Length: 418
Ligand code: HSE
Image (cartoon, rainbow, N blue to C red; front, side, top):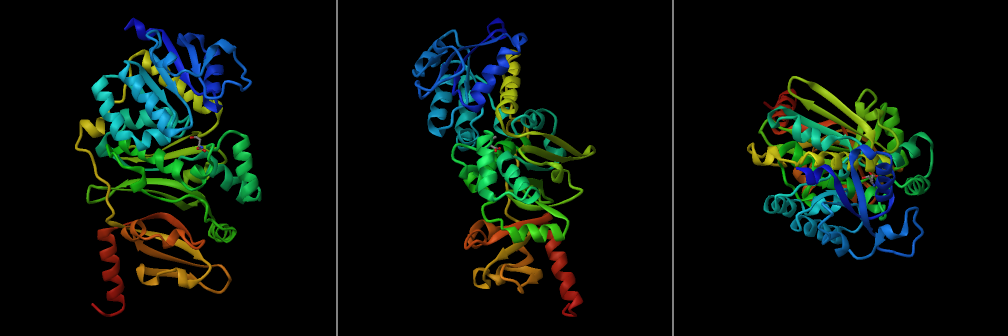
């Protein structure tokens, strides 16, 4: 496959990641990859590269027969989808870092890869520098993968670290994340958990063969976390992290969500600070494994794009093994979670929706409780993210259906009812 030994790249986007890739490629001549043209939106901007490299005409890249790889690292979702689909249809392989586009159009992109027999790789789209997608795809068998817990958004982890360890205000911490190039151009995507859930949707297909619409996965960001939550966390020797979790339950289905979580000090994820990401995988026989690395920023993200380019030289493609070669798994809502909930007024909290409440503290202005809720309740109701209510899962939050029945029976026995 000589054509692929030398990669001729058409690059879309010259922002944080695009420019990072350009610089990295200049330092890795062994890759035999050359950027032929870069398509940008605003031609007037001063850029640190030869002017004749740039164009605003996307067809100059997409219709150039010499260009055999399109690297797409732009910000807008729909234009990115157009570029990627046209590239595949025109017989080009694609490397993309557009998490939102990939997650929202995953089903269509799976079909298109089959139809065109071309490859689209996107290691940079989840956990930036950590090679998690290829590992999930290649290394872990479906049967052996018990659970996945991860910090997948660098900006929110950076903000939480700066707020709670360095006592910066939220706004200051966010501004810093923006200045350092970690945050999305619309930072609400980070803060409200949308970026994290998009990444989670991508990981679910490689971990368990589940193609899930990210809008249907239960998620929240860090926007409701209050200073009082950090005080409670500190009293209990916990940290607050935004955690994606997926776990195979006893019923053979998968529980998955992205929510703020209390993390114990001996949890690997508590070690993950600032813009770093971390992934804890639990698998049969191997027990726990921990992946750690920079989850945002120019060079860390570009390094994952570079690795995808290198993989394309030997015609690597995702086989989506768990989806196509195994019986793919399904998501389930049939489980319970233990959560800490803080709020301003009891009137905002539907107490009857809790299976039971273990702790409640109503003495100060900001009140809180710790209780068990069905996941269905979280999925169907919005009270837990409205009226400045803050919901943070406790460590090991998942309680399975069978366990809850046992726990309920035990409490009835203790009460002398059974
Ligand atoms: N805004 C993203 C983050 C960039 O903070 O994780 C990397 O995907």
